[in-house]
Image (cartoon, rainbow, N blue to C red; front, side, top):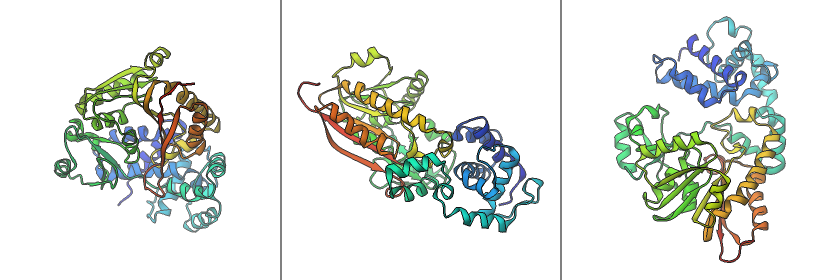
Length: 405
């Protein structure tokens, strides 16, 4: 593929916006891809892939370039892009921005970097140290796997279609899907494409959702007619899946602290043909009024997001250790206060997209020690090393009959 300067400029400008203007990587990339309708699918793929690559390998590329990771200047980003393209074996165009990039020097610096994990895997010091302390030897393989490109997966809306029918419909748009083994109604998309623009998406036949995250609503195992509370619903990806599993019967109370997310959920529910969702803004009174009312409560709590670094590589440069300490306190508070909505005989599912035990099983252990009427039934981890999914944790607890402490 010929490296046109307009495409290279798009990458540099987008990466600059991600770091200097603090834009989220996925949003910044979406914005630049919408800016030029003349770009074909290969052009768009080149821009997206190289933007993510620069963000993902930010520290390693700076090490090779002998610059500081706090250097966000466009001139430096051009050099980092040139280095990354060289490492991929690309022939660089003869432009001023790439002058002075010696193939031999790049190779020598790259080889030096391979002996130090935090540089080799492009990690901030604090994150490498924290993860190594909590995960031990597992961190080596996990750190490497979190730098891989995540596959694109969808969830089939079983209220409107099934795998075979959707496969035939998408084939007309030259989109091929393959089933995900062991995950209910999940499918991988063989080649990346602009799925949001497809009429099948607009008609609500599928949602774009990581296959691993689809295990969480299935872990709740909701039945038609149940009263289920999705207490950290956000824009509702898991809420919609719960509705499908419940065959649009019963009630799902979808809650969040941000009203705009619930408005987005309502739009998505309408598109999906879902009508058993009751969206409610979280207040202290709402929690109290729902005490002991739910057959099942799902707590997909705010977390560090370290399990989804494949999709959000900019997070490792924007996260701070102080934030993780704060979020762990919030997780503890949510687990304690929101669990009161489970009725005796009901179940509670706690979930995160983190790989840290301190956000996962340690939180559950602490909660169970303070709430003896809840009993752990089972827990499950996913990760890109063993499952090829993102890193998720989920724990199922039952609220046994008796007096709550």
